[in-house]
Length: 435
Image (cartoon, rainbow, N blue to C red; front, side, top):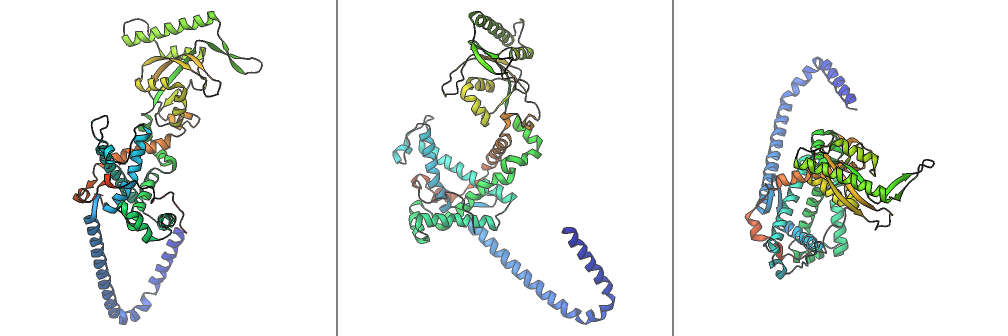
């Protein structure tokens, strides 16, 4: 289409050039008139531009003057801040209760002291400011790389209308009456909703759905890969062994005889001694990577994982699943440095109905992550790699810029977050598609 347009324009211009000589006489008589019209048009246009620019400047100045917090052109006024305070208080108290702390929206509770000696009120005020910073920075990121189109604005407006309809019977006056106790009104709610919308989608704008945009930036993905612990694991059971039927290929766990159990325990003791020798650097024989491979092949390790090893990360879904039964293995892997060896004792009960239990030890060897390991789509430990990388870098970006958010003198004059009640009434429950 673009090529077609270029060709059409070129043909038109060539045709105009051919006719130019024949029409010079006609154009000469009209030239003076056209110059006057053009001059008038330019003057009018410049006048409108100056007026519009002045009006825009006034609007920006007013917005800046009303701001309680701002960063690089993004501002938040008092009413919007009060809305966020009314919602943040719910999150804050809920988070404390999740930790087993009996938190309440009372003056007495907020004056009480947390473990670090600060009052819960002080923690709340600090946390709320950080919350505001994150929202403002997220809005700046959104505005830098995108802008609201008609569909976005329609969605925001429809979502607000739904809230007004559900909570205030569709009446803005009724909505304002309810909102007054929280310190905001309908216009503040609309502005806050737009900020929430931008904050929610800023990460998607930057990194794409599921972090897919990061696939084009190997430097970043390798940086995130470095947050993983890459370990080779050799499991040795001390009460059962795996028997595979040569005819059917089916495997089952059978109890060890007393002799076999003693043999395994002796082997475990000798390998543990090799680990201790390496740690103490006493000159005696030490464990090697080949020792781990031999243990993997001889005993109870998952043969499918021996080649690639395990990749653990606190944010990864599969790590969390593995950690349910083998938490000591995962935690030990985080403590170790590449090149180190260790061993943990295990007693995993089959308490979730899966019929699996394990008693024995796990030998661990930690090594550097293999470059590009996350590209192996068959490795379940990277199933959510790009999404988690997106979360990681987005959080870093927010933290890096949050310190640049400025709280104006109006914040201390107008905003009393501890006095704002918890708002269970007026909020966006979900985004509604606009018409």
